[in-house]
Length: 172
Image (cartoon, rainbow, N blue to C red; front, side, top):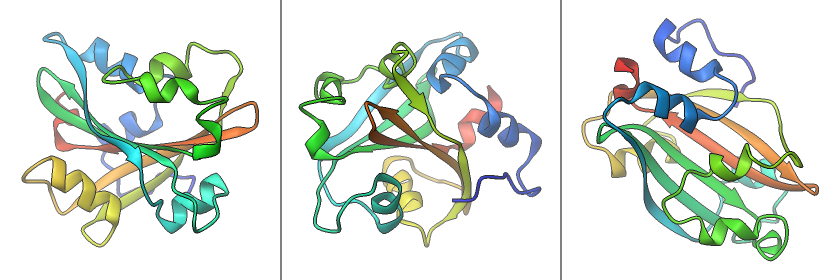
């Protein structure tokens, strides 16, 4: 993913892509009817090649993969995918296992020892597995979506968080 948002992103999407801090907190403020997280999947699974590179995983490693929908007033606004190497689940990222349907941000932004790396941005279409995962969770998506990702580090252990912005976010 590149580190600059292309000029083709609309102003509304660009505003969400560029927000710093906790996306969950920003959404909570923008959702008068309520914000919640719906966990879709959490298990050890294969990482895609770009995810392996971002996390420094060997091709045969199966990280913990967590996929969720962030809902605003029961409308899906973000599809998120997070990965952590299995070897870090008994150490720096052990809290991931018991997170359930709580926002990952409650852990990431509350702990001062966790550092966030640079944001990267990408426009997705149906050729990308991330788009297809979001489309499996949400019906009737437009032909392309914008996503951002960053690596969080705790005690040098990386955690990759990718957020795909769904059409519903534009009305927030």
